[in-house]
Length: 242
Image (cartoon, rainbow, N blue to C red; front, side, top):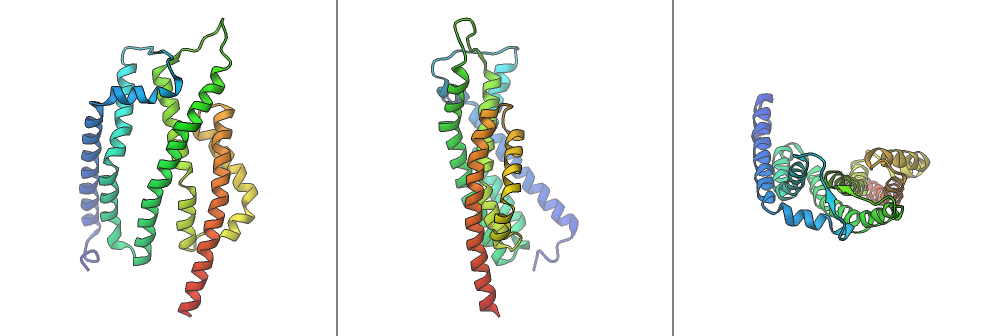
């Protein structure tokens, strides 16, 4: 009842306050993570073994540490950010929509973690071994630390986001926006779009693009299965309501 009496500017004021809380949580998490940034950097460098890194400008190493701390702060502050998001949107949602949102947030976090972990522990080492095999006695690999952090970060975020596909499709199917049958018919176009997206969001090399595109195709097939299951449950629910 209280939500119905709120004006547009009341909602704007509430959104501003919740964004402020989320921003403070992010900054606090980032500052806290900065105290542990060197051990975190050493952990990030594990896939390359004992290779030595360089930095090519005075602020490059510091800014790389800031990026690592920012990513760690985002992970640390994510419970607060998600809670503020939930508190802002849930009064205007129906019970079914609230369940879908909770489902999406919970399993979305799990799938993102699985995708990010798969990228860091499997894809990144494989990619590095592939690229490093081309060095020889005349040409030795020497990585810029900033470029390496950017490479690892883009791979981790790309795979984490790609693993969200089944969750997004399942929620849309539960709401009746998409159907498993429709997705199956659009499989050919979807595969083309997936590899196009992989080419955009990964580093500019064919290996990374293929290694992201193939899992995304498999995740799309899983999405079809989940969507068909949601389609059957939705049809059964509508039959019971009739």
